[in-house]
Image (cartoon, rainbow, N blue to C red; front, side, top):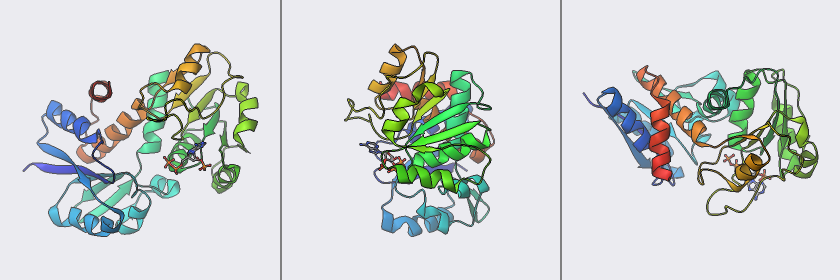
Length: 276
Ligand code: ATR
């Protein structure tokens, strides 16, 4: 019988997940379909019940439900609990289990696409919101040497650092403080929405003090290369856009559902073609 998968969120009509997952199902000859479901905040509990009632095999969860969904699931894995967000639900018999593949997806993409190791690296995260949390805990688990966080609202960066019970050193900075220290980092990651279409001229941080060969990563994939990444490239940095994180979070979810790790290069092409 054809298995049904999907993503719940609002807004949802621009989601590239159906295209990416359906292409992977087709390529692998798996009899399944992935659908985008528009679910408003108030409808979340009913939607989760619906997953069980309809026998949907797996669901991705996106804005605005990633945190609220935790209380509605039968169990949540440790990484997702620590991050405080679930983006992937797996149905096992009559139980719904929550996972987070966003943070792990980012780290996997970073390792594969920049051919680097996280272990021993000094890292600067820009932003202290939901996306930053997932990336922060996943990088810490991957044994980064130091993770500093800078944010427009410095207190939020301080809170995130304080909350970490993992052995990783790091400090909180304002954006201006971080700009002065840029040359000290091996990897710099923008987790904010600054530079996202249509505000394509905005930049999260000045790159005046950037060293050549620093890895500069932006989780934004629309535009494919933000103005900030373009500038980093001009300064001789190794740059990475947000397509990798998007594709790898999807690939890790796909693997949890089907037991098969899909062809990520093909998934990237599908996504880039659509964005192009
Ligand atoms: P997400 O889940 O995508 O991370 P979020 O939780 O709303 O979204 O977090 C957005 C992040 O982008 C925050 O770090 C936010 O900074 P504040 O904590 O100061 O709000 C940052 N951000 C959003 N717009 C920004 C802007 N115009 N300038 C600087 N930082 C911005």
